Image (tube, rainbow, N blue to C red):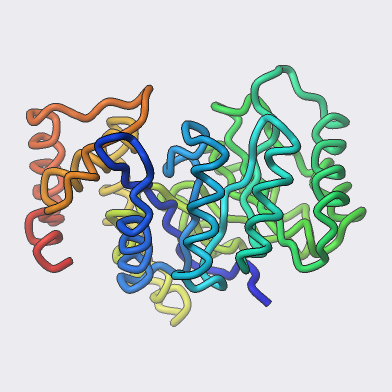
Length: 308
């Protein structure tokens, strides 16, 4: 059965045409390249994929065509919407396409959300989809969603729905939050939302990371993971230090604008320069500045794109 695994997941970008329609063939090529470059898996239609700026029909089409072309066991599909029925529809479509692992935001527009309302939302989702193979990874991004999943509600959902309640991507940027999640919720995968916490998360029993910047840093992420798996702590620590420096450089701009602009500057595909509002491409000056900062720490984008 397809279920989330440990390791490094890249949160994929979504290439768009000049008419701002998803370029699905380019997306499939990109996901395939990420896996070939070392990603243990790829998360589609998350924040980095501009999912909440896409229509329901566009998301459904991506899910359907991805199910034909991509390895289901390596893919997590983002299905969270404010509208419960849309989340149900996307989750059912994912299952129909062979994807049983889904990444789900809480309903994020009306605030404040209570624990009771979040429990009701996910209970209704799980009972309506009615599929024991379903594996939900909760998407904890309180800065955007306004809700911070706590261990109490996660344990309640786990008690009620068992293995369906599979894990969490924690994008709170709070290390103590990751510690609490790992220590408090049994049989539960915890992924850091930033590769800065990759090694620390693995060391305390977490599962790895699901990261936007892994679109660029996937090979460096995998060096950390492989050294950790091989029980080579010095190599793992050195690799993590380099990785954290790269991530810090990339945190100076919104990831979608930045990553797409970097890919567009070095790629032969015009699709990478297209992004949905509210995102705008970076200026040439900003792109050069990022490239120079990366080169200063040994990450040469020009060589990176030549090799890939």
